[in-house]
Length: 212
Image (cartoon, rainbow, N blue to C red; front, side, top):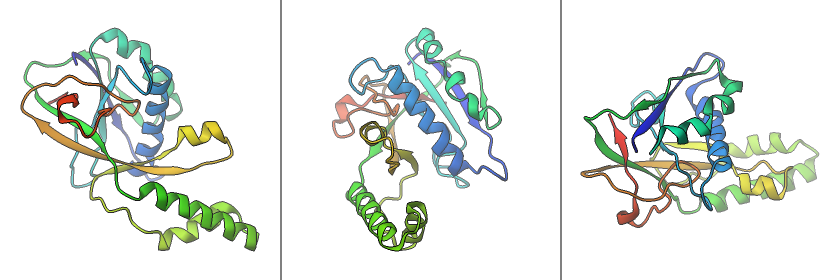
């Protein structure tokens, strides 16, 4: 990864960091899908440069990395984030500096997260049909008793694009848990359309991104 583009999130009283991460990362995911180079494969990787901060676990900044400047230009991320122009500061594309360390970001699959969400949706739908209350209100009420996925990793709530393609009326969200791993040397591998490592199990195929 030789070039990068930096995006800083700008929260305010109406839009906190959790809300902004959900909206901004959703758009980045859609942009990576639109510019994919293979089946669920992206030429652009995502890095959370302030991962692990005390105030907010994912920090308030992300970087997009690519092998060439052209790949970042073709992504045209400013257009994808135009609706949120008051909430992001996007810097110009720059070469990666010489003094760096190497990290990788992977999606941590938490056992039961999909089934928990599926059961919540089914309960809310049943309750909505029986009571006549809107589905959103039923979901909100059930949130209080919703089982927690067992992970301490930072996460972002995202909408399932596959479910939305099958049924545009469906609006199912899931938590994308993100884990950072420090590496001694740079590694090559594949990046998925979340901008993360495509293979979260095989260490030899983890792709590193510069950290500085």
